[in-house]
Amino acid sequence: MHTSSVLSWLALAALGACSSDTPATTSTIFFAPDPFAGLPVDDEGKRIVIDTESGGDRFRVRVDEALRDPLTAKGGCLHEVIACIERQPEKGDAIIARCVSDAPTCASDRPWEEAERCCPAACQEAFAAAAPTDVAAAFRAHLADGRGCYPGLAAFLEGGEP
Image 1 (spheres, helix red, strand yellow):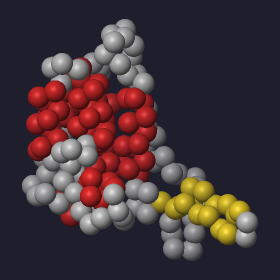
Image 2 (image 1 turned 90 degrees about the horizontal axis):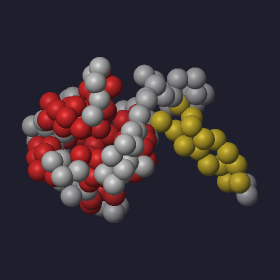
Image 3 (image 1 turned 90 degrees about the vertical axis):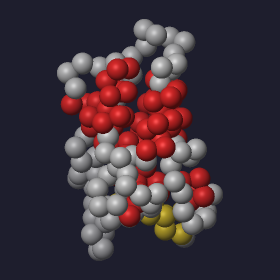
Image 4 (image 1 turned 60 degrees about the horizontal axis):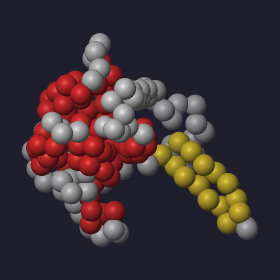
């Protein structure tokens, strides 16, 4: 799993605890610069997250930093937004909205083929339209989940080609 994919799932889990019904609730998300540092490395140079055996079968989960697909690219978008939020001295809805808006916008409908991490314009626009009502819900729907706006993601998650 790509580092940014792991970050996207962590962000989704953390934001799942947010609710606009409890305005005093604050969620803080911290990410290590390299969350996989210190993990063992296999003979292909990939870091091993899980390595176990059950019933005579080996089960291994490895990190493939070179993997590029709709899910890892979506994680890259989340990485850009969350890194921006973490750099800000202040926090809050306005900062989140600004970081989503300021994230690099993808030039194509195949973000996983782009050289740099980016966010699809459709996701940024959907977030901007929904954010005035509920920033946390808009973030979850259009960035952390993103199936409705991220090109190729829904088909990829259903096992098809993006």
